[in-house]
Image 1 (tube, rainbow, N blue to C red):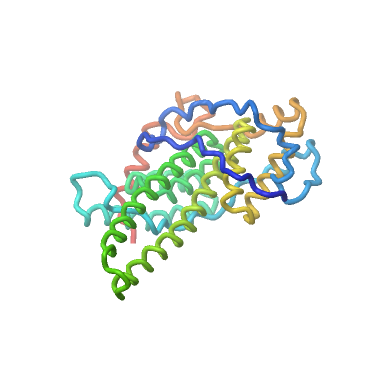
Image 2: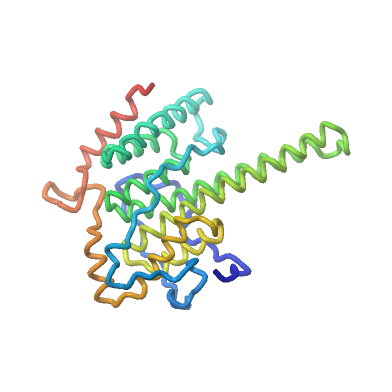
Length: 306
């Protein structure tokens, strides 16, 4: 693998608007990447040259990691909406974490629709937790809800950025508290805490951000957005160059990009993309009716979880 670029490309998927509710219109078409080099010529995109040929597209197209993202330890209560007590907000977050365990079990057992509904309830309870969006992105991908999977990955990136901004404010306050104390034991202790927070937080955020870019890339590839998928994979690789999942996805993208137009179109049709909400009763491309989805999510939100 050749050396990294000297500067990162900025991610274009993050938005400042609040997280979009499930069932809203899918993400708008991404911008063209007109001046990007051909994927096949970028030798750093994979650790080794894949032996597969374009005719094996369907066989080599693998799902993202089947494991859920663990709970985000950096979720901030202070950034939640006004008018709620800390106890109420904390209670909702705790319930969302318990429900996530139920969703993880459903996903492992292959009950994908149930896992998707439970995670949607989790997000209603704790809508700033990037790990929940990343997990629903995975389940949506397995359900062939590729637009939903991509959008959840994008929302996760927005949550991560907001969380970083909150953490920067916290670290600034800690630093201001230690200013003027010179080399006292208390001041040195505060500085050590800040440095440790910075290092731990950066590792965790890099891990989550790389996972979000990987999720986005996998969904984009199934939507035929190969140039944008390459951009997301490059961002993921720059954050975690030794991650086997990312390396495998890069190799698969090379295979897809080198296939003929006819082979790519055939492969894309085989993906059978679905929609979350049916537009009518006889809509075979939709998974849930609107009323079915709303009732199920409300049930999980109100359900007692031990």
